[in-house]
Amino acid sequence: MICIFRVYVVFLLVLFGCTSALAEAVYSLPDAELLSSEFTKRWGSGTLTSRTDTGDGVRFNLTMGNASDDGKIGIGDNYPVSSAAGLLWDDELHHFSSLAAYGSYQMVFRYDTGPANSELNLCLYMNTGLTGPSGYPSNDLTNNTYWQGAQGEAEYGWITIALGETVTVNLDFDNAWADGINDNQDPHTGGDLGWADQDWYTINMRDRHEISHLGFQVADFDHDALGSAVSLHVSGVPTPGAFVLLGFGGGIALLIRRRRKTRGKPVE
Image 1 (cartoon, rainbow, N blue to C red):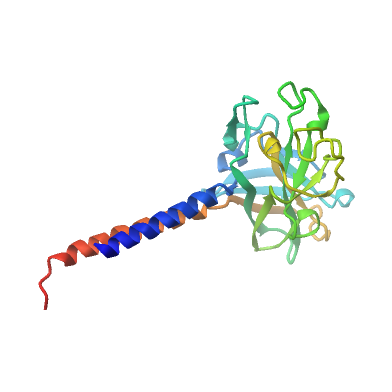
Image 2 (tube, rainbow, N blue to C red):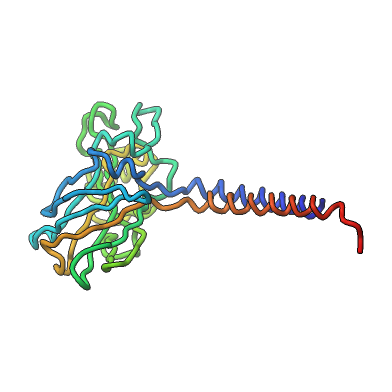
C-alpha cells in the first residue's frame, strides 16, 4: 500500500510538471488546416502543384521557382485564419485569433522527393496585429508584424533539409525574427519604442492574441533544385506531456494490478 501511495505521489508531481509544461505548449497546424483551400500559395516564384492526405500528415508537391528569389514559395492561411487551424477565442477581439496559450509554433518536415543530393531551406512564419476595426489601434496597418524562425537555428531562422531527411522547424515566441516592428504602437510588441526591423524579439501577449496569418516557406538557397518538382511531407509535433501521462498512467495501473494479484498469495 505504501508503495502504491508513493507511486501516486510521483504521478502527481509528474502531472504538475506536465501541466506547467503545457503553459509553454507547442502549437502545430492540424492536417485539416494543411488541406484547407484557404491554406495556399501566398507569394514566391515557386508553385504549389498538389497535396495529399497521407493519414499521418500532408504531402505537399511543389515546383521550385527561379533564381530571382531563390525559388521561394510561401504557403499559408491569411486573415481571417480558417477555423480548421484551431486558434483560440479572444474575448477582446471576438475572433478565433489567439495562440497565447502556446510558447512556440512547430512543424515536422520530411524531404521525400527531389533532385539527387539536393537541399531545401525551410522556415515557419506568422503575422500578428489585426489591422481592421477590431485591431489595436483600429484600422491601422502599423499593427502588422511579420515573424519567422527561432534564433540559433540559422540565419533569420531558416533550417536546411537534405533529400530524405526529417527536421522539426520552430518559431519560438520568446525569440523570433521580426520585420515591420519598427512602427508598432502600444500595446503591440515594442510599441512606440522604434525597435529595429530584422532583429530578434519576444512576441508580447497582445500580439500572441492577434494572429492574422500562419504558414511556412520553402526556398533553395544553393540553387540545386530550382525549377524541379519536389515533395515535402508535413505534420504536427506530438505533445510530449500526453505521452508521459499515458505511459505513467499505464504503469500505475499495471503496478496496482500486480499488487492485487500477489496480495492473496501464501508465504513460501
